[in-house]
Amino acid sequence: MAKKEKTTNAVDILHRRYIKDDAERKASVQAERVNAEVAQLIYDLRKNAGLTQKELAELIDTTQSVVSRLEDADYDGHSLSILHRVAGALKQKLTVEMTAVDPDVAASRQAFLLFLRMLRRREGLSVEELAKRSGIDRAELSAIEWNNGYRPTPLTLHKLGDFYSIPQRRLAALAGAIRDDTVSEHASRFAAQSESFAKLTREERRVVDEFVKFLKAEA
Image (cartoon, rainbow, N blue to C red; front, side, top):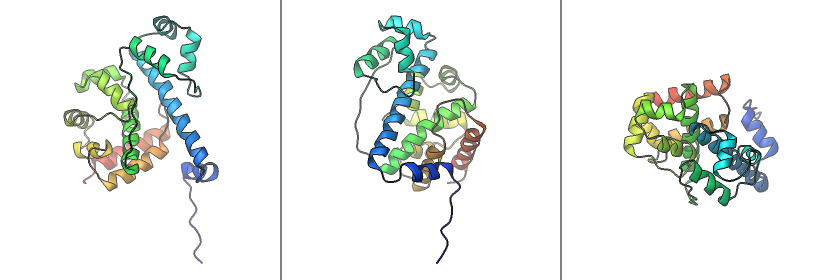
């Protein structure tokens, strides 16, 4: 009987040990991911607007401690009402979308968000700086990095590809605009290794570099 190959991938080990096929645990992990994304989105938009937590609190008629909780990845009390007020204060439009998508396409889109966010951070750029250098509207860049349902235009994908020297077709596949099983496979692997919202660690930088190398390779 062949000996089962052992895995050394930390993500795979933790997934098998703690989640496996437990639907309730998977739902919990997804909820935690959404909470973290909402918290980081509010933080990034506030910082890009040049506001302190206290200043944002005053704009939405609440306290600094409430804004602090909203930016806490572990906080699960984000209501549509408070998010609508935050969006208005930061000159953003709040949208809610529910769509049934191909699991492979969904995985690619999630990887697309993570990849562009981490790629920008690897270059040491703020959203505003990237907007100026790439010629892409700042609001659109924020939507691309945080809204899983947002569909960037071919022109935007062209500008991103040109700025980062990545083939537009590969970015289009990553964004879910076209089907490419090879890109989907690599995208899922990338997303599993890089779901982090903090400053890039050395390991995360390596993961980003490897994914960039794959995207730039001959299709």
